[in-house]
Image 1 (spheres, rainbow, N blue to C red):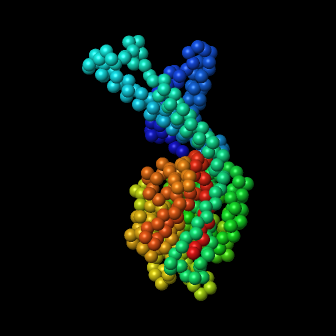
Image 2 (image 1 turned 30 degrees about the vertical axis):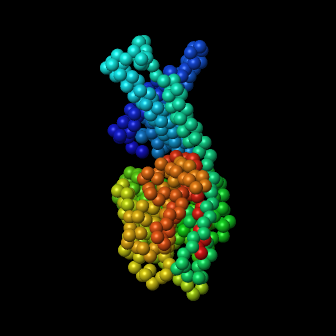
Image 3 (image 1 turned 135 degrees about the vertical axis):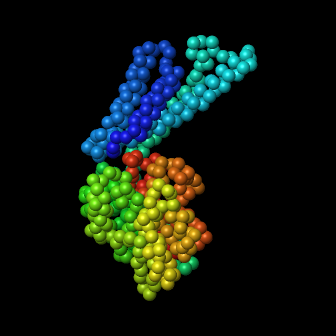
Length: 414
């Protein structure tokens, strides 16, 4: 992580948030206990200064810190940032109220509007201060709780019916996983348990839709023996995701970056996986055949590159009655698949992780990521075409999951 002017802007914003939130702290401090007031103030500023110190040190020391330490420290600081941001929203509402009352008092001198004549002017609302602190604390507590969910692999089972599926493929069991992000793992035994859950489903075929690593191929070193256990009668097939290209780190040279990608491709092969790079394979069962296509990362979002080439993967599949597409980014669905390739029957994607934060209850699901991605988790249908977006096996950035658990998808075709 490199130092930059942008990083100092973040530090500056954090300082302003610390000062602003302190205004709410002062309002709710107990009046009758000076020692308790002092203790609360010292605790608040100790936490705030510690978080600021970590922020200042991050650009220069982040890469040298132990992975577990930097992961949890960074997540905690980010959690504090957003919690204080939430509190600040409530304070801003209160300040808007106070400003309105002041203006009304000045313009109309209305005696019915009670305005404090103390040196503090119009006093802050204790209710809104408490409400803001409660909302921010709840968010922070929820994020801390989510640390314990990152390896709670959840199996989602669905049966998908298609009129044009060849008879021999009726009942085909597919395990779909995505977004392993091996560079984020800190508990190998927990990951092993997840792989055992996959194998316990006895799938006919396993399909992985990208982001094996966060950035570097070396992240897989300690997990080769884990993911090489993934086997299925019809094979394990994979594609690349946006993180696999190493686009988010600084490389010594373009050659080093290219070598990293080449090594990652080799790793897929060493795991026993068939990496599909803008190509297709034919799956055979009995006398029937279907096509499996896999493309490199293709995104309709401007911030992500379009490495994928359907024009290379699709030709030759026209003759097969049923087609499955593996494409990492779900924005590819509306961006190209439904408009240009209406005979793709099933697309499998990942990428969003469900933002690792949201709410899922029967009949309802919500996550902030839905304001960026129309298709972000679960099953979607357009006409006779179906898209399934996996919530991710691993995690990135925030080392936890709140409401959106890591997913192993079991799809049975019918």
